[in-house]
Length: 404
Image (cartoon, rainbow, N blue to C red):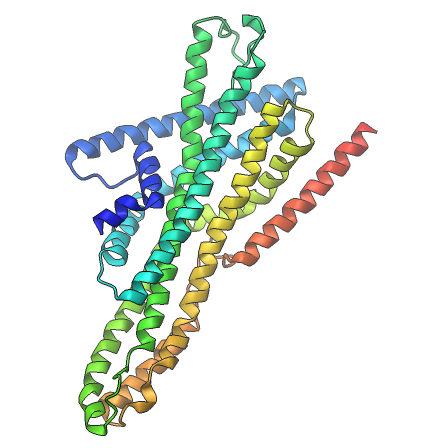
């Protein structure tokens, strides 16, 4: 299993970025101190970036600059800061979710069909995490390259930063410019990592949770299988064994339901914030990337951000939709068990009654919600995109009328 983990790109990427910001499982006291140091450094950089962008908003409003550009940057920075603050509030629960997944989802003996379900989850996570991470890195590189390209051929006093600083000091002269430029790049890196790394690990958690519900459905389906032994004596002999196995599966079902509730506790506010903000962000990214009168390098930033935000939104809604679908289908697996072949002795009757309870409980599907207001599914994805398109149309029409 350790070899498979090392070959899993999604786990490697998520582990790398979470270690970068200091939110991973420490194996010894030295690593624990290092994680604390990185966490402090990440928090400081996120707060520094927030202060810079808030000052930029204030002076942009004061001097009537490009408000939409600054607001777009502000929402992006604030989302990253809010995510890390929420995760820090639930730090122990967050790390325990990862530990539980390692111990109970991966380090388990599976048969061939169950292994195929796990491999399918792995491929899904690799696709989503690789796409979101690659687009995020491209957006970061675009942020860095844009001022470098625009500074070519300019005097020192005309040079620009990643984000406007608005301080009455000779910061545009060397070496102060280079020092502050590097500080902004570092801060931007940590804000960007906080923006997508928690969603990457969330994708892994929910996709594997949905996979566990699929495995449980398969186990219920195979519960009473006896191959070719169908005599009454054989069925009576095995009825007690099947009932003992059923109790084990019911406990597994309860653990998965509790795991979903724990995941909901950690991520519900993050999901709520993203659902509220993503429609506005996608609208602003689309405007800045497609319609704004800006250099191509700057527009490239927002094209990457637009693609990345849509991919990230699809990633977490797809995972949540999978949990809803496969937790509901556990009922089909319980009904498909060959309970009709069981004798009507004590174990057979108890098995039937407990299967009915499993079916009834499975009809109350597990789901991740936006702070309890509504469940997240692929329908949420289409709703947010529809709202973003409406905002985009209104913004374009308003700006066109203002120009006229």
